[in-house]
Length: 395
Ligand code: FAS
Ligand code: PHB
Image (cartoon, rainbow, N blue to C red; front, side, top):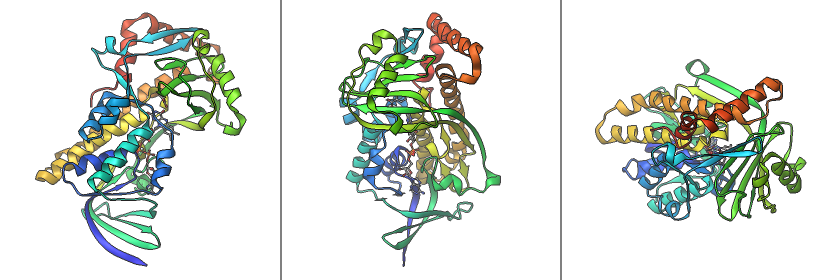
């Protein structure tokens, strides 16, 4: 059955953080946008992902009217530690960046706040949309079609925002001749475990160890999130909770390992690591934002925060266009976004290269990692490079 054709100013594909934040900023500027999402809302919320928010993202969430719970429950962190050779070195973020900090607040909570804010505005989101397809985005009359409950719908719009993640339909809809991809796939993944136990450290600890990388993070003072590097061939079933905690302790300095509190996993999953950028990020009336355009290994805590800067540039360009007809912001979008993306790609690749076990890099490679870490621990200039990238480069 074919449903009616309706019209929107912007059609957003994907109701993850990128799509929801873009939708919220547009709605508050009276730009009419529809979000079309393939999954159910509870499925989107069930995905456990990022945990560290840069100040650029927290500012945007406040601008979007989603700062109240963030400011009440978010944990402001003024530093984190690098661990190697059974010692830890604290990176004093605030001292090294003139007072900047990061906020620990799970992506799940960001997504929940954005969903609730959108519903409070009465802005439309279609969940469980099937066969989403993009049409005529190389013209100024783009269309999106999707099927819902057996009925095919068509949305005529001025612009399409592809916020549908790495595996979404938007980037795949661009002709190969029009897009260039840059990629590095890592031969390992992160096994993450979420448990309702106090974290082993008040601040995050990124650990380099000959057995592999480990990360101690958290969602609150009573909910810990920890990770260990595992071979890509590993499956979650290979890692019962006890084995995870034993391996985590082996990779942490003894004083941190002694504070690891084992507790039953409430979520456990393996995420592959990849560096990826698609250029450009605009194709006529189609704009890509967030993971639809780029992926970083989570070692630098940049994925979600890069989605935020994309949305900042794109929302301000679209609002400027609908308010006064200027195309300056949307014409500059791809170049502005990519300038920040590539710097975050570099930092994420560098942190990953420095902290993970690369067997084929040999003993010399391992010594280079330790020399890099020792340099950071002994040079304020080197530590400042880490700090200013970790808190987030300016938008
Ligand atoms: P998302 O992938 O979050 O959202 C895209 C949405 O589009 C999804 O809801 C999807 O269902 C929908 N969609 C897909 N195809 C569609 C279609 N055809 N039609 C309609 N909708 C469609 N970042 C960090 O900073 N730190 C981390 O620790 C971290 N860990 C991660 C772990 C994993 C397993 C993954 C996959 C990512 C992780 N990230 C992390 C990065 C992650 O947080 C992303 O940067 C963030 O989710 C980006 O948000 P979106 O761009 O909205 O993409
Ligand atoms: C997390 O808490 O999930 C997290 C934190 C920092 C990272 C990656 C993941 O770099």
